[in-house]
Length: 137
Ligand SMILES: [Zn+2]
Image 1 (cartoon, rainbow, N blue to C red):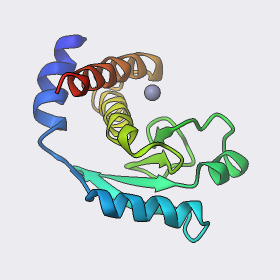
Image 2 (image 1 turned 135 degrees about the horizontal axis):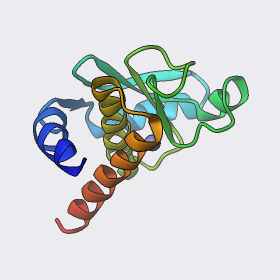
Image 3 (image 1 turned 90 degrees about the horizontal axis):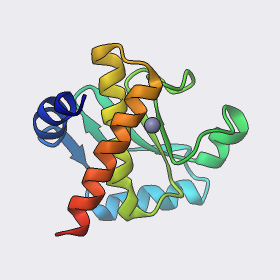
Image 4 (image 1 turned 180 degrees about the vertical axis):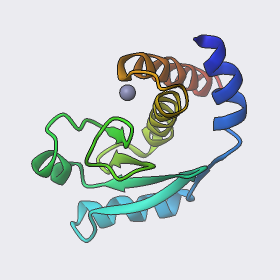
């Protein structure tokens, strides 16, 4: 399991393909949503997957009280195909870690037809590794 993640996602698939808007655009997107001027704003892309910041309060009320921090279309039926949603309430520093989690989870469910629980555990390993690596920079 770990090898699958390390070889295919962490090094090749994930890192080299993720595109995220610069920080000032992230801040702007966060403000637009917090001021209720937008429900979702695109902040990045990983291959065919579009990454959005969303109004988590609206998601909770309209769709899912269990929407916490982030979700992806492989897990949540109300998220359109090939999308990752992140709650705009997240701290800016946490956003890359949450993207890492969602992309790894999505990838394992879609590519290996893995069930949610297994994919979520692998995503936690990936996220933890990324947080540890970041701490040591
Ligand atoms: Zn998860």
